[in-house]
Image 1 (cartoon, rainbow, N blue to C red):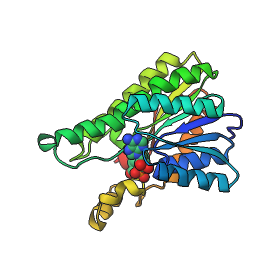
Image 2: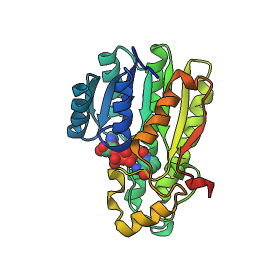
Image 3: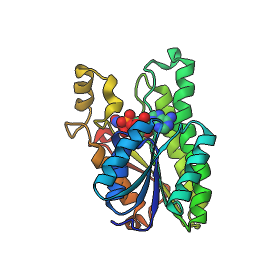
Image 4: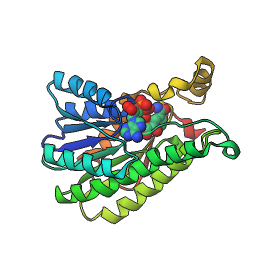
Length: 248
Ligand code: NAD
């Protein structure tokens, strides 16, 4: 897979899955805008990429803020000469509580980042991509884009919605040179799971037939495939990388 001559924007790329995707894209020749709400984290990832001979730029901003997303797309285009690859990856887990007790501000925050953030990425990324002659988009959903998880109503609702949004955008732009797909990872060992103690982690692991959690690099491998020309007839679909979690 090569992305030479292409410019990518990866949101939430200062850690975990986004970081692995940004590093892998840069290694495959793309110029990568590494976006994160933390400029520090984005800069650390850029330094890691540049040290290996890749090209990257750090961008800070909140994907829940439409104006910030519009600006980060414009910045990426000005720096990279276009936008060909977009990974709407930024996300949070949010509070844990059953639906009848779910904190209202937690609901708004999770929907703001995990759903609105993806919509804003599409809303501003698609016009830029059309001007650049087309490209490919991956939206980071989750296994929780197709099954529930007690205590996570906002996350589950947002990720199901991301799968729907992916299908809609894919249909709309399929003849205009833009493919849009969603990825559904099971539990991946990243800082997102820092809130789980040892017992909770062991229980999570037991839910995966593979007997372990996934690695960020395993999600990046699927994401790069979907972004690449190898996936030229794949659009509007939702691709699991889940160690068998949803096969049970
Ligand atoms: P992570 O916490 O390691 O990384 C997420 C990054 O997003 C962080 O660097 C954080 O600073 C950034 N971020 C948070 N809010 C932001 C905002 N408003 N604007 C911009 N950046 C923001 O998490 P991760 O595990 O790498 O998760 C990445 C994506 O993968 C998320 O969408 C998550 O829902 C999804 N996912 C994760 C898992 C998992 O088990 N780790 C499973 C399925 C899906």
